[in-house]
Image 1 (cartoon, one colour):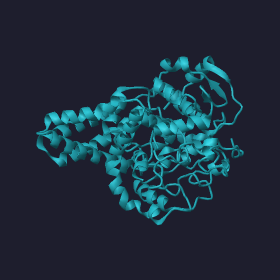
Image 2 (image 1 turned 120 degrees about the horizontal axis):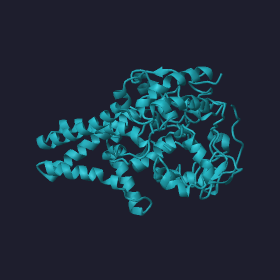
Image 3 (image 1 turned 60 degrees about the vertical axis):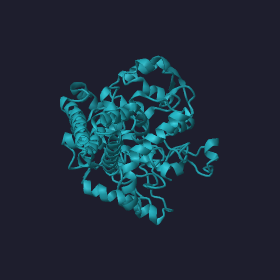
Image 4 (image 1 turned 45 degrees about the vertical axis):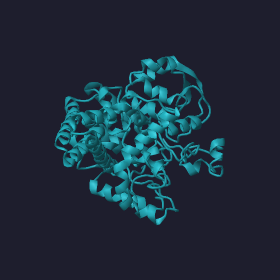
Length: 470
């Protein structure tokens, strides 16, 4: 099972700095939620979710706290829930074609959205009966549906023969692009160390950001060594598979999207009536100081979890350390290597953050929880409500790879390599037409301005934004 995201990088740093179905009926929230003061709210307050997310209001918001909270909210014991059945996948963990981490991380949770979006062929569905444990009668926490005659399942059936023919993995062009970014980063870094040039190291940092943007495509897929390019940036590909792949991608722009919740209260993208003047308009200024520090703060938070025993140190977490050691070998002194290393990651952090926060998800016309939600809660349609694509990027693999392009299709089919998404566009547009979905592109400038308009917005849309059911 397998982001973008959206403001992909900033969300982790905030706590340190500071077929239609009606909406689900009321259910009592858990004891942990009651302690947080949510006892008076029902599922209507949560846009169809039965529970307010456990750990959402923690001061430290990470992949670990999110998945731990989801495990409490889903309440399925030692099983994996898919629709209304429980499965014991313990004996399948080491056999999982996508890699065992996906199953290890999601044990004890509802993986319906992840299962549906990650598996396009029927192979996984045909394998499930071997691991069936029992039915479950309690309703799912998530409001999303996957009806056979709905938008997403119909689109999947159309996409299936296309991908069977062209494959889901990267083309040679994508592989060359990814490796070229990494090689260019290394050459610029060596040149910067030899010449003690801050200009060159800033360029190296920008290229490292491009390398990470492109590697995001690879960590959504089955285990592969190129996904570890992402870890060169001080981020963790493993953590992002959870926070980005399992949270943001599946529950986009909702209270279960950690790339929304962990930005708060500094960035308030949800249309809340109590936003202060600073929250609505201050980010123009203060984000310029925060974005260069995102990588470092993320690293500190991960080290804290590892020190406290919540998370294990993974070998790829040491890649930035190896990076620094090699820079020290080439530089005239350890001190100079350290200064260049810091500037390198500050430049990378700013690039990655500046790109990620504006590319797809924030504009007053895009759904954010609090806005009126469509009556037909088909997961695919709800994804399109929360995503937009940029007209200047689509069709150019270079721009797609460095700036999270073809984002609508990427959200619908996250495990399909970006280089294969163009093959899907014809049947995607055809299915949109059949369901009355007015799919449109936006200009990058619209999304840049739209980000600040959304931050300033404190009243919800009274109608489903952008894509309205016919």
